[in-house]
Image (tube, rainbow, N blue to C red):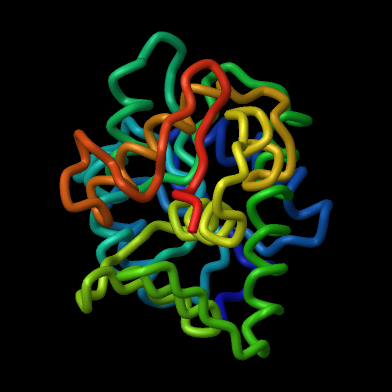
Length: 232
């Protein structure tokens, strides 16, 4: 289990490091700093990290590449920092496995809210791993204690948010969840967040578990309402 009190903060600007480290340490978190992409990967390998805050614009390796590499080895929650207007970076970050993003400039209150929400979700999920619980829906098998997913006998790798979303939907077949409800359930609140980011996570999830993502059979879109898992 990752150490939820340790946060890897990756940004090449000293001012941002100082601005964000202080409020995190005041709340009792231990902050590990990195100022370029290569150092970020190295520090992640050396430390027991519970959450990563990752700027998109970094020397040596950019944040998107770092996100991709981290996600290939871990489902640790990742929050990406993007500059205002960098819409492509937001979408790419989510596609590569980031769980959330926050746009600069942002308030410290907003930043703390995002961090607390993701760490709270992660802590709750890991605490629940003592339960022997498996969700089976046809050819889909979700092992909660091990946080593994198999579809048609093949194991698929999901991000933290993708796994949480799939568990929520599959646990409630036929129940429609609006985008706002999904944000509140998955991230501890919908404040400061754009509901359409849920669409990116759903699309990515479908690419991993549906036979044909363009004609989904498991996660269905309910026009004007949201999403639901196929009823039994």
